[in-house]
Image (tube, helix red, strand yellow):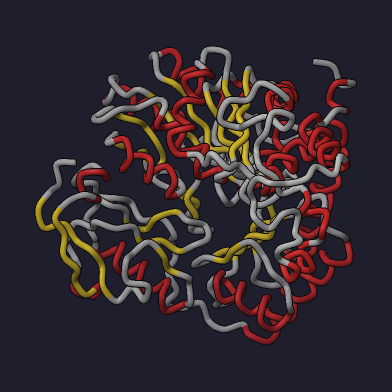
Length: 487
C-alpha cells in the first residue's frame, strides 16, 4: 500500500461525515450527542460527545467489519508491515490475551519470561495453559530484570520441545530489548509460534536506530499499545498478525471477550494516530530520541543517578535499548524509585510513568517540549541535593525468581483461604501481588511465597509502592491454596 494511501483516515473521515449529517438519534448512547449530560459535555466538549456513537451501517461494526473499520485496519496493517491488524478497545491487555487464547488450550505449554505483564498470566488462567518460565537476565548494577537471552530460550525449548509458542517482551518497561530476530528463527525452527508483547514498542515501526519490531522479524502476532507512544487515546490498541496467522479465527477469539459496543472515539483515535505515524513518525521519534539523549547526558552529571542506555548492552539478555525511554537508577542516592516518583509528583508537580524499588521511568514522546525536559532535570538535581541519604540496607534487586508449583488456572480456581501476609511464607499463592505500574507480578497464582518474594513485597509496601492484585486492598492478607482446583 502506497504512502499516498496512508494519508487517508477512513474511519475518522466516516465518523466526521456522520456527525456533520446531523442525524436524528434514537439509538444509544443515551446522552444523545451530549444533550442529556450537560456537565459531561462541558468537561469533554460537544465535539467529543457528538462522536460517541453506536455502530450502524455507515459506521461499520468492530465485531464484523466490512466497511470503514475494515479499511482503517487494512491501512494499519500496511503501516506496521503486518498481514492483518485488528483494532482493540480493551487496551493491550486484551490484545495480549487474544494472542494466547488463540494459540493455546488447556495443558499447552508456552515459553515466556517471568517479568511479563499480568495480562499474560491472566490469559494462562483463562486458557489453562502452562508457563515455562525463563528467568530474564539481571543487570547486577541496576538490579533490573532484562530480556531473555537466546541461549536460555534454546535451553527451554530443548527441555520443552512440545511447547506451542514463545512469548517475548519487546521491549521491557525499562526499554531493554532481546535479540528478537534470533528468538523468532529459533521458535519457528522448532515449530513454535512467536508472540510479542510490544506494549512499549509501537514506535519501533516508525523510527530509525531503534530495536527491531516484531513484524519485521517474522513474528506471528504482536500486541501494540498505540496509546502509549503512538498518540491514540488511552485503552486503544492494535493486534498485529503475520502472514501465517488465521486472521478470521483470531477475530473469533477476540470477539469472545471484546465489547459489542466499541468506542468510536477510541477507534477514530487509532485511525488518526496511525496516519500521523505513517506520515511523520520518523521525524517525531528522531526528536524524541534527541530529547531523551540530552536528558540522559544532563542527569548523568548529577551525582548518584544512572540514566542508562546502550552502553549497558551485552549482546545477550540486554541485546538492545529503546533510546526514547528515560530510565534512571536512583538507589545510589539512597532513595527507591517510588520515593523519587512521589517527590516529583508531590513537590514538583511532575508526573512520570512509574517508580519501583530502584529506578524511575519517564516516557518521552511527540507531545513533550524541551522546557519540560529541563524542568525534570532540575527537579532531579534538587531531589539529590535535598533528600539524598545513605543507600545502606536498600534492596538491590527487583526481580524475584518464581517457584512454580501449580499452573496458574489450577491455583486461581483452587479451594482457598486467606492468611496474614507476614505468616504466608512457604504457602502457594492463589492471587497476584504486584506493584502497579509496571504490573509485573512479584507473586502469581500457583507460585510459592518464598522468603525473597515476601521480603520484596514488604519492602515495596514500606517504600510506598501501590500494591495490587489481592482481594484485600490493604494487602494485610493474601489468598493461599488449600486444595488444588480442577477447573
